[in-house]
Length: 310
Image (tube, rainbow, N blue to C red):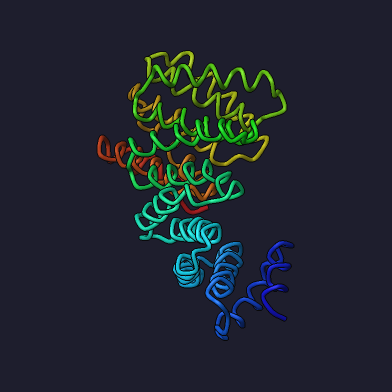
């Protein structure tokens, strides 16, 4: 079995078998640079798809280097995308992921149409990593570019909605209410065209609620949150549910109900951890720290029922 067999296994998404073969071929190394680059890429990607990010890192780096050496720019681009994703999933490697995504985008003129079609995803993933790193303005810029690029290349409406939803949330976080309002209208139009899109609907409800909070209209926000929680729970969307409960926690905090804010914050933290979205976990933790600073007794009151023996 050789590289052709490996290509077939990768196309069939048989990650365990692909990893085993790629690992054997990777250590043989008796190939031209382009084939060696593909073997390294396959090893990195097959491991990445099994959540083996730490062991995927080295072959990912080797694949990108060899593909660049062989002037196979399509493979180089794919290697960079995989490497950036791997780096983004390893704590402490986020800045490297940002650099790798930029490297991919810097070479876009060399790619075929097949690889250029992935540019919106690269911009979106770059924005996600920047958001995780606290680079709010950079994330805003690249979420916006992802939406614009996706419209140019004909990305599916469903995918464009995901990009737009993230841009809308980011705009709310940085307080750009004019952009948020415009994007909320876009979201309402999308949900009207796609009534079956429950995930889009629950995120829109959250964003409308946070917009209401941002403009001081708590009475409008709470019914939106309750609807979002019900819908988010019904489709088991932990990230949307975490955002819903977090907004409610913030309302309680603003209104001086610190016990309620802490209790809801703990619930939001559980859902955020379940979502496996580090930026959402960090956001919830920031809110919880703020409540603790205001009133340490709130923590004791919130935690006592959990710690009391049965």
